[in-house]
Image 1 (tube, each protein chain N blue to C red):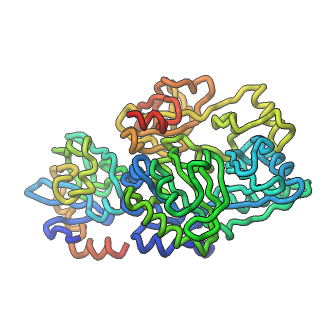
Image 2: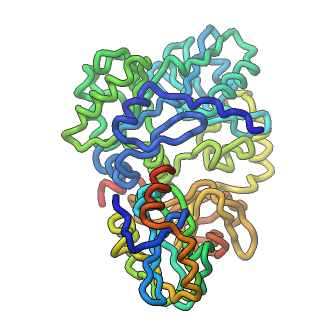
Image 3: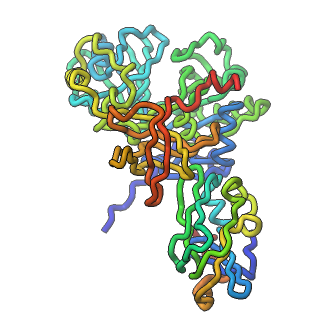
Length: 127
Length: 372
């Protein structure tokens, strides 16, 4: 699997794609593979506050529930509603169609603490 | 300093699982496949076609001797005297206080010989418990290392296994077994299972397990057989509301509470736990294992708190998605007065109360499912 170069990654297996002051958040390919069949996604409402490193929702597979940690701080401005009825899209296209939320970032400099694609790939591969 | 972990025990099929790309997990000290292709796909294979499980981690105990029946009937709560040779019975080992040591299958091999299939993690405990309560002319042997066990389950299980044996499998009725030969190996073929589907559990010597596994996979290919892991085994048994030791039943629960009164035969004479069960029956059973289905958005999972009428009502003992129903289901203990079906309860999911309704079990009924 190749991880997009223009994303930044967390050690908890989320990604963020930055455009202007908006960060689009998702789950990595590695995360969905480890979870297995995803059956439920619990996402915040538009307007919710996000804090870097803190849970903003949860994703559940057949076997287990896992928190989703926000890679950036700010305010949720959009939620991918299609995942409520089609959570399996997270298995099919975790880096594209199955993005989770968009956040208006309050501290864009935070992304400097996140992993590059190459560093994340090495980290996930070693896990 | 932490104690060094004991090496995981392996079944004779460990290498076969790894070749199939299974994800392996530590299950009670055993290195076991939790999934191969995916839990949903494996679950559906068993409900719609056929699946094969390596359940060689399960424990086996053998009881032999002139008073084998007396020993079995003293340590278990069901009535083994009702068994004919070639018949199996779901039963339980109970403590003096009526709590579960384990649940198990009792097979009658001969008037003086019984074969017990017990939970993997409980095997040594069960053996010690039976030995400690053996005041009969009978011997109990821990025989787990002499058996591998494969479960072939699903609507095409019979046709799959039939290709590998001369025994007319349809002549083996549910909860019966036959000792014969399967794919060239001496085998005990039992029409039992833990999925809510028709199927067989086949006991063979460990040395014969890998060949049997490969031959069953080949025989089932035309039906779309899937190797299935412990993940699918759990979702299947939960839909069928079959109890899991350590979750739904344990040393602190009685058969009355667990809805397993049908395996308690008070009239058979005295047995371990009988006095406590009689007393609980007379004084009232305080809580009952109850099925629920989520009505709000959320999945009530093992250990989550249950609230009824604004009070803590208990905990979820087993909970998760039902692939067959496409709903989220579970089991929990509720105070007996609140355990009727149709009651709204709340499960605490990540700190928020999510609504659920109590429902009858099993959640999935094989006959009902076939007609839909």
